[in-house]
Length: 429
Image (tube, rainbow, N blue to C red; front, top):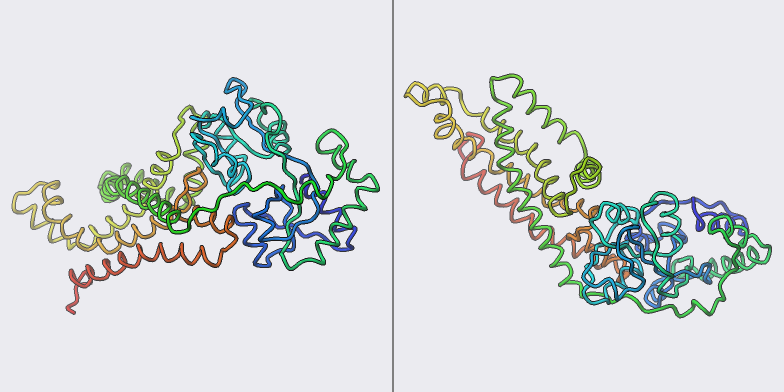
């Protein structure tokens, strides 16, 4: 529910059609509109010159602006220039992001939705959040009573209903419907219901030009930065997952049954729940228990714990594949269990599991795309942002795919080469 949704229902009634709503992530909503997935977007979309070049807009239906929120015991700021040196959360591809990126010294963290930014502000990971004034005031009133909006809106913006650039007839029909809804007083009553005061449609020309806010970054440098983040996350996840996976794998083979069952439960838990849920649990649930971790440690821990479960099973299978006579022979020569495992069994097992471990590294690289939920801009998040900002998803997403392929293809070939060289199947080539 919401003001936009109720307004669209009234417009649909005026047009004699039924409104069918589709919930979509804001960072992908404009590419989906341009691809014809739906007819219009009603999601507090600010009219800007850049967006007008890509899409058709209805007449403005709401006068808004960007507003700052902090904790009640936090920063008493009233302007963007006072945010320098602070961590500030925004929703990706919104005018709040574009405004703050022009402010020197502001550390901007981009979230998939503004409620996640407000949760981080509440958890003291952020110093402030900037977003649309009506959205911010409504969410604070509903769910965040320890947060407070500061001052008045700092920009002059207008919301419009976005449509495909070729949908001129639909745009004209929507504009006429808005005029009729306003003339009958329905707009004022709707405004009263959601914002506490009656309102009227803004003057059409007031939002026609909009404000130029975004600066499109160059495609290649931006994707390279995202790729570097994905690689760092992958390497750190493997560094955490490999030793833990080895320990868990050995525990799974241990004759002490409670230890084996505990290791098995860990593997089932990690493999049986989505990685995204694990990231959410570490980053958003642990603070309720008194453990507050920054985004990067949370992401690395989640990736490491998840990867360790798969690595443990790979290593367990590799060790179990070694003939029991190897261990018996080593023990008969006077080696202890630990020595036999270290010098005889593990070296052979590791040769057999290098190819599947390489495949696990590839899977982990692709899984890093999930950490965007904690405001880390890795390769997929960067691509999503660029596709929406540039309005060219057919250019951006193939480029993102090629970047991933440039990393995963050599690793796949390496795994195949090692498998052939070491003949892990036991057959001669």
